[in-house]
Length: 186
Image (cartoon, rainbow, N blue to C red; front, side):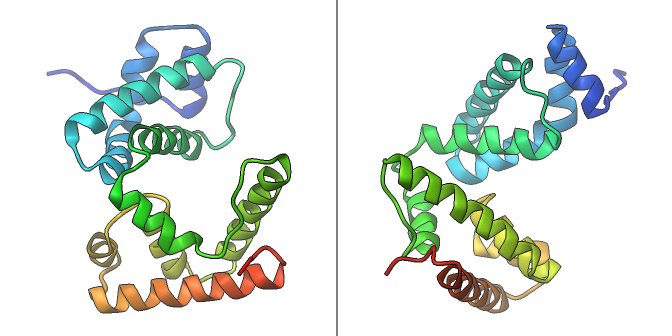
């Protein structure tokens, strides 16, 4: 019977910096289910999710060094999420979520738009820190991890109706907050 040995994030990053093949095994032991869940929620196909996770591991391998993220799990989640979104840019599910969440937000390809998008991201983070833990968790599960409303409801122990209501109210509060910060465009 094989014993799984899970390293700390620091030890894992050390192995990646040393280019040890063990790093990939340890990365998968520690974060494989987490990464596959993120990719699977976005892509909806286990085979595509597995390929996406492999691509993300390669990106991590190439990024460390020089990168040494402070919050490794969050950083890894973002890498996987971005890889998954990049694989299916016209995915109906992610496009619907994007439309639901970004109505009224700035878009565009200019440097000014990039700066504004970064400001919006920082404002959303600040807004979420002000919300109750359950509302914040539901929001993040729905719009970051792309969980279905039903999956969020199950995770939260809520009815689907309550989940939809909490998400709707949180989106409306976010809209008000972003208007106050002059980051909402109608």
